[in-house]
Length: 423
Image 1 (cartoon, rainbow, N blue to C red):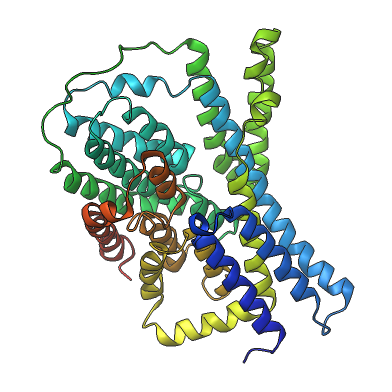
Image 2 (cartoon, rainbow, N blue to C red):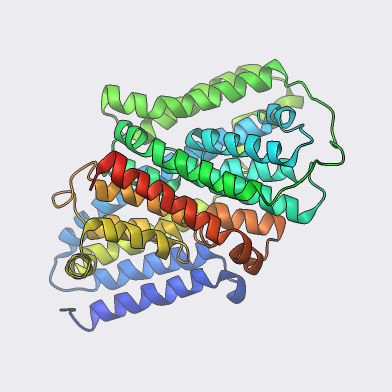
């Protein structure tokens, strides 16, 4: 039972806030603005309760804020490292591999880069980088959309099996729902199957060769390549450091960032290269995603503290035949609803005492939330980025890509269910 009127008011605020987030383009209000306002108001309502003292409320809020801060610091650290690589032209070497005339070869090469590099540098980053490169190769709009869709599907699949590949996977890792080793071991093959099936289905829509390659082969400078390797190494160090020392992931990313900061300061001491130092690079970061994430987590934690998510979880478990069906439904819902609040809500609903670390519910959630958002384009940040960069009509995507995306997701899901988990 909900404790009216506070519980109902809290739910109403979150519903209204999320409607503003969903219809961001129509209302002309950024989703970061709506999310942050929603999160703050949710906690104001929660603090209005009289059953707890001020000290107890502050202690509960402090625990939630500590967990949120770790995730935000981690995200900002990764964003900074990726921007350092980009500022040093560290992604330039990818251009040379894409210098193919065959449209299908370009699709497969771009898809391979998207899958493997998304696992390290994040699916959103690699989607933006690769789609920008493809726009310089493919003059035909439909060719760009198809190859870009392949990048999107392969990138989201690559991000699903890695603790640093997608924000939803990172959330589950930092929240200790999943360990990095089991995430990679158990989800790599299903994710790979998903990516391969998606590319196989899309390649038949591409025929012939590109008329010309619009650029000549470029050599990446030793400094650019060194910064790329250093950045990738810094991110790969995070799960290793967590396993060896037990320190939270944000400490590992801060260690990697501090090493890169030292190296770039030593390399760029002259004023003409000051724009390549981290203090200058930080000013170019787009932190709207981190602020959106902050607002969403504040709102979800308020709902969890109120006990609303716990009651919702009991209802779901009573209605669903098994946790497998809950995870499967997550994929379909995440095709419409942003997968970040969806994952945060699921984490708040089901405690680790009920579903312990590495339970198949969490593994399927990582896969479903990461890949399911590709089915309808608007369910993930990568899809929204691709749509805005290439002006992809939602109707075109639904007609041409949604079914291959769904079939690829199902192939990976069945691979996990019958060959990995047998649940």
